[in-house]
Length: 321
Image (cartoon, rainbow, N blue to C red; front, top):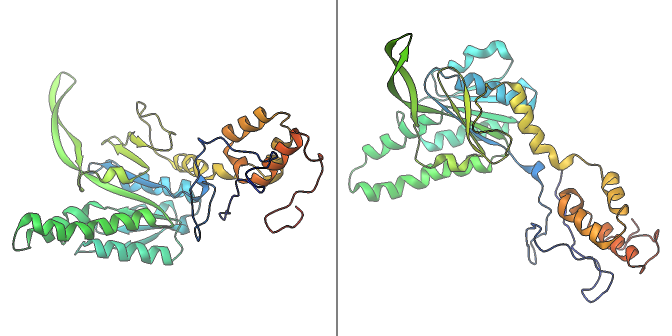
């Protein structure tokens, strides 16, 4: 859905027929050459981090999640740094693989993402992004080979890492990043015996990277998933589950919520309001009607008896609606 400018009012501020939206509603203020646009979640692109130890099913789960999002294996690309392990799941569907080898510099990741974007991929899986931080030619490796002051050297490397983060955030594709967890062992009781069990402890990437993702999934060695960060509010952090394609469908539906209503349905909602209070409540509780500011203003004027019920509205170009 293309974004459209949203006029708050089509009449002068001193006109009694003007409908004033509640002040607490979120809008993006633009001045002069900037445009005022209705916030629209349908424009959102999901950034998912899939974190877990080796063997936890990060790659497999990412593929199922990606298919759930786009429903077309041919629109999925895997940027594979795991020695072509992405091919192990080719039985799932005809997805695309870009093999990325050392050196794992931020610039090579950016180039790989750009290649996938140009190919028209809907979902890009970075499997894994840990190599950019702790792999051969990655950020830590680059820093270790630099001469001079360590702190000063970080000021040179950090912008390169940040450029990759910005590439992920600005991509027109949905991005799923797998992150390795540092390995650790804990002693657990099984059948009356103490046995060591491998667990994931901390993601191998720069601290704070998870803040840049919409959703963060933590996987254990049994492929169980806990959602530790969720800006969509779709998942319960206390309930573990296993990822499948329905998880991706659920996320994609959240992205598409902005298109749930046709324009005619929204106009009917506006015309059903009999008082200004009802109109304000509709504006506050139904975000989809906010783009129809001309209709809102007209309905407010009708309620006040200032214009006939069926008088033609005028859009910003002076043409009848």
